[in-house]
Length: 263
Image (cartoon, rainbow, N blue to C red; front, side):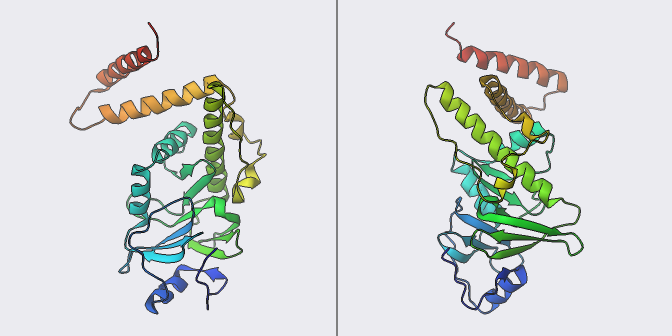
């Protein structure tokens, strides 16, 4: 990793980063674009600049964009965005937990993101993690053997969050593999990366629900379609009552199904 580490301790904390900002030791890059090469992002929006990024290729840098802005810009310009993540989260019954799933690359928020920015960590760049509930801290050991420390509330379970993120990654990769196979092609399935390898052979009740057949793919695509339709008829301008919402959904699903039929 090209990380400007001169005089830097092995453990990277937000306090250390703020000290480095004070001494102008972190370069500013206000045209930075998020990618799966990002190892972690520290939210420092209380300072003049908003985010410190640790990137596998570009090293450590600071940008005036918030973590929320960086991720939203990325999401709006790419096929893989938060829609897939939202559908998988909703389907598993944990609507308040939303990682960004990019196939084998997964980004975990380390705080609630409903009302602002959060710290984010790329699980595919980490080899281990530990939660200290008494100090409300989460520490990640990167594949380059640096330790990244974040605030993490004692009310959240870090191992469970990593586990679920790993499941969503595996779920999406299985869906993509099945779609490609059904089209008569082959795709090589890459193994789980980073810390997510710890769950690659998990046999929990969640992992038993991973897609196995084309029927599973159709169900996921139906969920994706329904979720999109729901976003449309939930527009405040429409103000559809509950019964009319259900009737509208039924009509739209029927019409969309007809588009997939020859006659």
